[in-house]
Image (cartoon, rainbow, N blue to C red; front, side, top):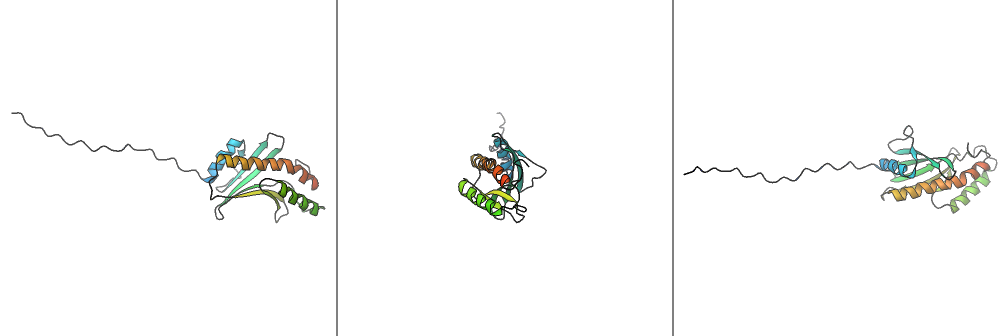
Amino acid sequence: MSPLFAQAPAPPPQAPKSARPAPRLTLIDSIKRYLQHVGATVDQSKSTADMVVSNYADPRGGGKTTIVIVNDRRKALLGFYVYNFGSLKKATNREDVYKFLLGANDAITIGSFFVDNEEDIGYKYMMSTAQPLNQNAFSTIYLTMAAVVRDRRGEIRQMLGVGANN
């Protein structure tokens, strides 16, 4: 008679270990990636966790445009801002400039010109962060803003008596 050997039961099959999913990008990290796709650069020295300072060299001759993008978490808004149009502080034709800005606001597709409390002229576009932002939407907003700046900056600066590239 041969001895009987008991076999240990086979261990239950284990599910293969899955790799941890990549950490989800923050909105600002996504924006930095989107900026690369439109050919803009990020000024890391001026950017923060909720703000990206970007520079766009317009291939159509609009020069360099700095667009600041701010994630206002409290208000759930993403703001795109452009300055460097000039100031109304010493303007003698303030009313004409205001009329021009109002007319420009009626004519542009997105965003609006404004005068801040320091009397500097800016251009902004605000959007809700409740809806996801993808590359196509970002590119449309960013490049449209750059085009508005290209088309309007010279005339605004001329009205203010400031050089077009200063």
